[in-house]
Structures are given as structure tokens and as C-alpha cells.
Length: 331
Ligand code: NAI
Image (cartoon, rainbow, N blue to C red; front, side, top):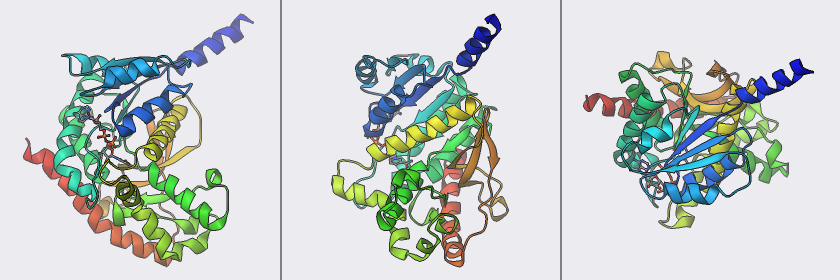
């Protein structure tokens, strides 16, 4: 009996997880923090923002779920205290798009935000899994990688660009056309996270015919614009994005807790197209206790998708190079 209790205790103890959100008072940050507060795998939620982090934390701390919640702001030492002991760090800090902007247009505002926050992660939580939401993801992930490298703490298995929203959207839009249950659709999306670099692979889904539906493919690639236009200057996707970020965080936490076979598509340091000068690529990734366990190959795709992938690679290469050049310029 005692033995069983000990086992139960140790398996519970293993699942203690401190999760930090940097940019927690923003449109994404607030909803994401709410969803994380509802996740039973999260035991300690640390919320940092330049403004408003403490208010969001006070509010969420009254929800009767197990996670304790603490808020942090620009008080000296607060960012470090927020990060210390974190198992998982999510970064949704930065400026969102306004109508007419591409994600790449955010580079000048957001590159330095991600650089500075990655620097803080390297100093205070170097072994945490780091999930980057801030756009342009195709560039901000390489920036974070360079910063971690400069501190000698880069682990390609623990850095992720969050592209889950593309898969969420592809599932929803396909289900609208096929009258299926959206929660049960699993559409793999590869490439990157902007415009033409977003490549859905319907040939590998239950609806292979959709791979030649140009209107649907374009809708998935530019779905963010629908939201940016509808919000008319008040920002970009925040609610669906929060759901997507929470799904990705949950996948990482489940795998850290020992669950096997957890697969999400995500933008990581990847061998798949390195021979073409592309160091980061989004594809299905099997997650494990230490982060990336296995990067799954793109697999067999049909000619329409080959064309999409071919069109994606030059943009992706440019976006990655822009991120790398930014960190080199600043040396
Ligand atoms: P928002 O403007 O509502 O919130 C951003 C928050 O970041 C603000 O509270 C701000 O105070 C905070 N912030 C800015 N600089 C900071 C710093 N150095 N340290 C800590 N906090 C800082 O923006 P929203 O809508 O939440 O979007 C955030 C980012 O997420 C944008 O870059 C947006 O493009 C991106 N995004 C990414 C998606 C994805 O699929 N990966 C989807 C949608 C948006």
C-alpha cells in the first residue's frame, strides 16, 4: 500500500510545472493565461508584462483551479524572478498587425522584443522549453536561437515557433466545406508561419481532394488578414491564437509528463531543408520529455502541394536570414 502511495506521489510530483507568459497582459497573453490557469498540468503560472501583468495575475488568481498565479512588471529583478524555475516559457510579447501589414512588417518592432526576452530566458531559465508566438515567427525563432547560442545554452530540442493556429484554421475551414466535426480534423501544415510559407497538406488528410482547392489554400495562408481587417486596426487574432498557444503548451507539458506519441506541427531547428539553406522549418514533430523527440519528414505529397512547398522555400529562407542578420548586426 505504502509503495503505491509513494508511486502516486512521485508521479504527481513529476508533473509540477511552472509556466511563464511574457507579454501576459496583451490580447493573446490574457486569454492564453486564462487557458493555462485552467490546465491541471500547470501548477505555477508566472505572468510578466511591461504593463498590467500584476492585474491580470490578481484577476486569474481567484479562479478555483490548482495553479498559483503571480504577476511581474518592470520592477528591477521581476523578469528574472518570473522566469526562475520555469519549465515552459511562452512569448506573445510585441506589436500585432494593423490592416495592410504583413507579418514581416512587424520585424522592426518585434525583433528587439524577442531578442531581449530570449536574453532573459537564457540567463534565468536556460533549460525551459521556449515557445515563441511573437511575429514574424519565421524570423523571431532564429533570433531567439542566436541569442541562446550566444549564451552557450542553445538546445534545438527546446525552442519552438508556435504555428498551431495554422493547423487549427485548416481543420476548421476543411470541416466547414466537408460538414465534418472540426475537433476531429487533423490537418498537417508545414513550412513557416506567414502567407505563402504556410503549406497545408490535405493529401495526407481524410480530404485529399482539398489539396487542389486554391481558394481554401489561400484562405488558410491569409486567414490572419481576415481577422486583422475585421478588427479594423484593433489588432490581429488573439482568441483563436490563445487557444492554439494553449494547445501547443499542453502538448509540450503532456510529453514532459511522459505521454507518448504527442505530435504537433511546429517551427523548429530542422534538418529537413538545411541542404537548401533553410535551418528552421515547421513540420510535424513528436514531442518527448526533453522537447523535440523526432522531427517527422514531410512525407509523400501531391504535385499541387509540391508546387506550394516550392513557392514557400524562398520566402522562408529570406525570413530566416533576416532574423539571423539582425542578431549578427547587433554583435
Ligand atoms: P497586444 O499588443 O495585444 O499585446 C502585446 C503585449 O506585449 C502588450 O501587453 C505589451 O505590453 C507586451 N509587451 C511588449 N513588449 C514587451 C516586452 N519587451 N516585454 C514584455 N511585454 C511586452 O498584441 P497581441 O495581439 O497579443 O499579439 C502579440 C504578438 O503575437 C504579435 O507579435 C502578433 O503578431 C503575434 N501573433 C502570433 C500568432 C501566431 O500564430 N504565432 C497569431 C497572432 C498574433
